[in-house]
Length: 248
Image (tube, helix red, strand yellow):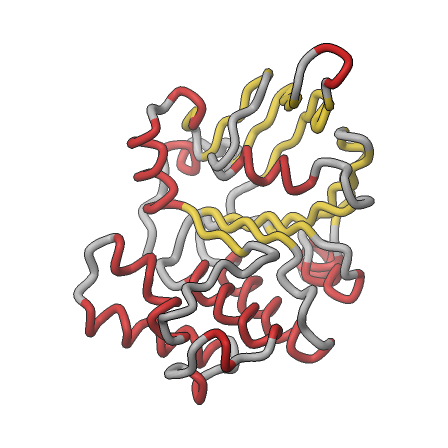
C-alpha cells in the first residue's frame, strides 16, 4: 500500500492547479492550449475531464502527471512542484507515483500481455517472477486472465486497452491519469474497467483523472470538470459522490 504523503496528512488537495497556462509557438503562430486553469482534485477522488476535442484536456493531464511542462502558473501534486524537479528526479517521481493510460496504448509489441503489465514493477526493481505474478493477477481483474501469454498483435483493440489499464494500475500508483480509457471498449467491458479504476481510487489517497467523451461512464465520477477553449468552465459533483453523500 502506498505511503500517505504529507499533503494528504495535512488535508491538502492531491492536485492543485492555479492559473496554469500552456502555449506553443511564438508571435502570430502562438497557440494557447491552456488559458489560466484553476482546479483542485482531492485525494481518493475520481475526476473526469470532459469537453470538445482540442479544448486542452490531454494537455492538462500531461502537465499534472509531469510529462509536459507548463508555460505559466503553479501546479502542485501531492504537495510537490514537479516543474521544479530536474529531469532525473521527475522521471523517478513518475515511476514511483504515477500510472498512465494513453489513447494509443503504447504496448511493447515483442512482450506478452503479462510482460507489458509487469513493466512498471520491473523498472522499480521487483523480482521478475513476483512482477509477472502480480501482472497476472491484474490481468484477471480486467478480464484477461486467459490472454496473459498473448502478444499485442494477437489482441483486439479493446483487449489491448485493458492491458494498458492493467499496466497503469499494477504498481498501485497514487496518481492515475487516463486518456479515453473506455474508447475501444463495449458498454459491459467499459463498465468492468471503470469498476477496477473506481476501486483503485477508493483506496486511501489515490487519485484518478480521466479524460473522456464516453457519457456511459459518468456515473463513476466523483466530480466532472468541463473544459472549453483551454479553460475550466465548471465543476459539478458526479453520481458516485452524490450516492455516497446520500448514504450519510
